[in-house]
Length: 158
Image (tube, rainbow, N blue to C red; front, side, top):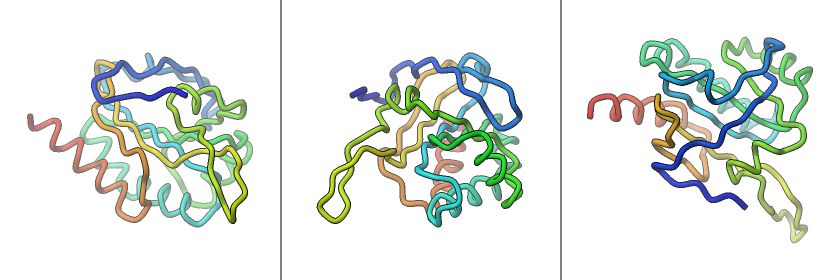
């Protein structure tokens, strides 16, 4: 399992996103990139998190930061999720889990004593040089987008 740390180069990736294109880490060079991993479209926590990022999208834009949500859902599912909630940032489809593996978010979980593999909700802030600036390894969805935005503001002031 990959264990990334602040200061590491972010893993290169290529992912299909909601506009039908494929993007990679190098496409965001020169910008801050918020990569957040979430479990599933249209679930309560994931919806709160997505709506939080969406409500602050203009502020992220003003800071030169892009937002990319990643789950194992299909592009079709992502498109419906974006349409339903008016999301104005891209979601990426990591159906095979390759990117989750690279970022260390594909983990063993447990519910009611049953163990299974799933995505750990986590967020990575990648700086314009492609290095990991900050990691939120376990996310509480309420207020998370504001926390990420505040971190970018703080980093840009230093």
